[in-house]
Length: 160
Length: 284
Ligand SMILES: Cc1cc2nc3c(=O)[nH]c(=O)nc-3n(C[C@H](O)[C@H](O)[C@H](O)COP(=O)(O)OP(=O)(O)OC[C@H]3O[C@@H](n4cnc5c(N)ncnc54)[C@H](O)[C@@H]3O)c2cc1C
Ligand code: FES
Ligand code: FES
Image (cartoon, rainbow over all chains, first blue to last red; front, top):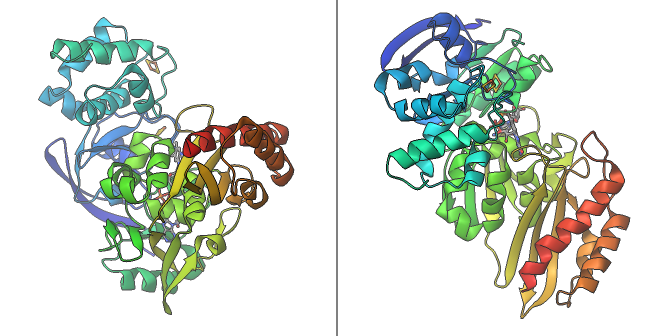
């Protein structure tokens, strides 16, 4: 049986076509085939959130989706969101609030928070914590991350 | 870790999916949202030769009202069920369970049917399906059949699905007048599988309970319907004394499993805690 597949998708606005092994997951595809190493690989079983990327407008676990399943999809990674400036305010607030130390969780955290402000811009601290409950951070203790989200929101004129 | 190599097909119709499963038999596996299957492949707990991705089979996803109640397509993502006004009004028990399933990124991919087909003993949706008397629609080579939730969940990760069959939808019957539901679970961290949880669906008239179902999850190999404890509700209004009687009855009736999260006496105790917290507001 053929264990390879041909896929074509859009990544950060650019078209990518490859023949890959069917077993390759999306985050490995992004890192190894496209050199987009901003999305990280931690646990590889869906627990840590380091591999979070955006597929057709929604965040997913890059380690639990086959690249083949993303055939035809519109994928965005931390590189793309940094280039478009969509999350610049969040990134600045992260730096100011020390919401990152080693930075391993940060790309996944930022993609998750970008979705949170689409879906629930007025989220309470408790709701922010619940929304990032699938993203592990072993450095910051999370409080600074919640602070950074609130700071960015306040600067946009939203609730503090 | 990385999965062992496999082939991948993405059938464009239910017939093609069933044919692919039939052709490859035991070596094949259905891929839905992948939120449980991918982890087991990555850890090499299983190594099928071919994955049959049902993600783009038409008509498997979506929520609609039917004469019998509500039909939730197997490929409907958890996030869509969570956001559905229809589910909130027609099956509030399911609506209140959804936020407890994993984390947002997992709910964006994971499917309603995948959770039912997997039948994890600590999962929310199998317990809700049993509490509501849902019916599973199953398609296979021989045609389509339906199985009641009670008969569908057979044991640890074991269901009435035969090899080669696809769960296509779950039908939730309409809710009778005066029936109310309540849901609660206890987990160490938000989004983790529950240590124990309760899906309750009970009749309440003028502050008095009637018939009802108390279905616990995380306490056995499949959702556990506490029949004798639920019978104590019949004709009663809520009181602390009733709560005590039910908590005692649950200690007798439940025979919970033990794991790193909780031993059996702790789970027996927590069953009573959940019953009080869920039932008291329903009679108010
Ligand atoms: C970090 C994390 C936390 C989680 N926490 C929870 C939780 O708290 N509660 C919970 O319930 N779940 C939890 N899950 C699991 C999640 O809900 C999955 O989405 C779900 O269990 C399986 O759905 P899926 O669509 O991803 O199925 P898949 O992973 O694709 O499939 C699971 C199994 O079911 C079979 N299958 C799938 N669909 C069908 C079908 N239509 N017909 C026949 N067989 C089928 C597959 O062959 C496979 O064996 C968690 C997952 C992760 C990664
Ligand atoms: S690497 Fe994907 S969740 Fe940990
Ligand atoms: S900054 Fe180190 S894991 Fe979050």
